[in-house]
Length: 342
Image (cartoon, rainbow, N blue to C red; front, side, top):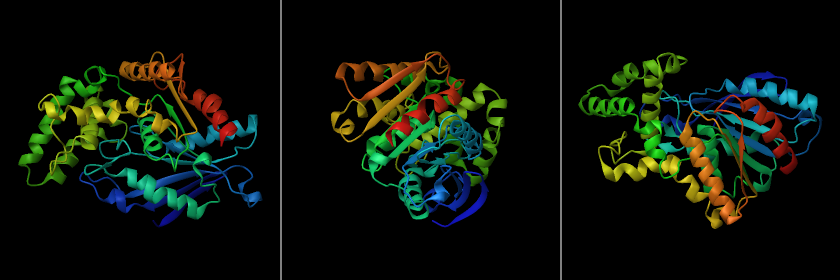
C-alpha cells in the first residue's frame, strides 16, 4: 500500500493511501483513503516503541473527523500528560455513507483494508508495540460496532476494545430499528428492482445516491437518511450470490439471519467465554436517552448477560443521547482508560 503524506500539523499526520481491497467494489467507493495518525508529544524525541489505538469513525463520517479529535487529544495532553500511545483514525465512508467495516461486494473489502493493509502499513511506518496487549481498537456508532467485531474476530491483533454507542441489537432490535422502516425498505426494494433492469447500473446508482452525499444526507430529511442506511446495511450484510443487494427480510424470510447478523451477533460473541478469554479488556458505553432506542436496549441486554456471567465486559450507561456527550466520553473516559492499560 503506497502512501502520500498530505498534511502534518503538530502531532496529527495525514496520509493518503490507495487500497486495492476497497477498489474491489460495486458502488464506486473511492479507493484513495485517508489515514490520520496522532503521535504522542515525545514521539520524535526518542526511539521507543508505542502502543496503538485504532479508532473507527461513525456512519457518514469522512476522514475530516480526525482534525476535531486531534484538538481533543491536544487538550488532554495540556491538562494531563502526553499520550502514551499512537492513535490511528480510519473512516468507513462510501457513496452510501457507511461500509460497516466488513468485506462486501457493494462497499469494498473494508475488513481487509483494516487488517491486511492498514495494520501492516502502520507497523512499517511507525515505531509500535505490535503485541495484542498493547493494541486497542475503538469506535463510535458504526465504528463502535466495527471495533467490537474486529476484536472478537481478531483477538491476536486487538487485545482491548472500547465501543461508544455501538449498534447492538437484542432479539427485538431488527423490528424496532430503521431497518424495518416502511419508506426506507420500499426505497431499498425499488433500488433492487431498478438495478435488475438497468443497462447502466453505475449511472443509476450515481443518480440514486446523489441525495446521500455530504450534508444532503441529513438535510433531505429523515426518510432520505433512513433509506441510505438501509441500502448501506443491506449492501454490507445481505448479498446473495451474484445479487449484491440481497432481498429484504420482509420479502424473503430466509434472509432474516443475514439482516440480523450485522448488529445482532455481537451479544452472542461477547457472551462467549472462548472469545472473552482472549481479550484483555472490553468496555461499551451507551446513553440512556439515545434517540436510537434499539441501541440502548441492545447494549443493556449485553450488560444483563455480562453481569449474569460475571464476565470482563464492562457496560457503562451515561446520561445523554447518541452523540451529545461524545467529546466528554472520549476525553474523560476513553483516553484515561487506555492511558492506564496500554
